[in-house]
Structures are given as C-alpha cells and as structure tokens.
Image (cartoon, rainbow, N blue to C red):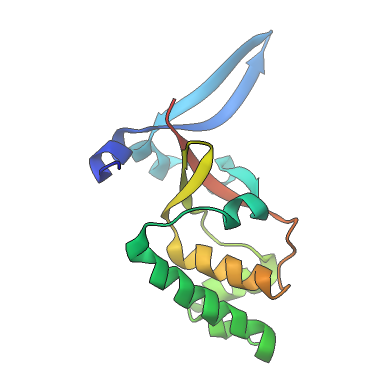
Length: 145
C-alpha cells in the first residue's frame, strides 16, 4: 500500500496530445495538481466511479454521505446533503461535484484517495435517480506510469 509521500511524488497523467504524428503525454507530480484549473481534469462514467474501492477506515463516512443524499429524493430538499450552501446549490443545478475527487488506478480498478463525501453523495443521488447513470463527471486520475 502506498504512503502519502509515495502518492505525493506519483506522476499524474492529465492530458494526451498529438502533434505532427508525435504522441505526447503531459505528466505531472501530485503536488503540481494544485496549480491546475478544474477544466483540465478528465471525464469518467458513473459505472466506473461506483465500483471504486475505498480505504476501510473511510467506508463508514462514505456510507453516511450516501444515506444523507438518498434523503434528497424523498423530500426534494437538496439541503439534506448537509454541506455548504454553495456546494448544495452546485449539486442541485449541475448534478455533479464542484471539485473533482482524486482516484488512483490500481490494477485497472479505481481507488478513491480524496473526496469521500463527494463520492458517497454521488452514489446516493445516482441510486435514487436524481443523477442519470450515463452522466460523466470530472475526476483527477493518478496512474503509475
């Protein structure tokens, strides 16, 4: 299992470019992510996101956020997500998270590193039909290259 310092020095693929038949990948270190704009993140389908693994110590929190967001469909009250006003409004109007969470690709599977509240919330909203299953969502994806 990777330590936080291992993750910090891990390389992140953010974009792929082709220029005059030359295929290049832009690779950054984890610490360089803070300077990037959110529109430089990639898109990934909810089916792939929902199968992501979570560290066992965070699973209870993910489940709590899942349950809170499931209540939105019952009362049609997005405030039940129980987050800041701006975040709740963003979920309601955009049907996605405001900031992309960070996933690590391990053996062709996704593992959630950062964004456990967002992850649980998305799973709950999708399970209750408030967000379509075929919608894409921006994520940061770390790959060991």
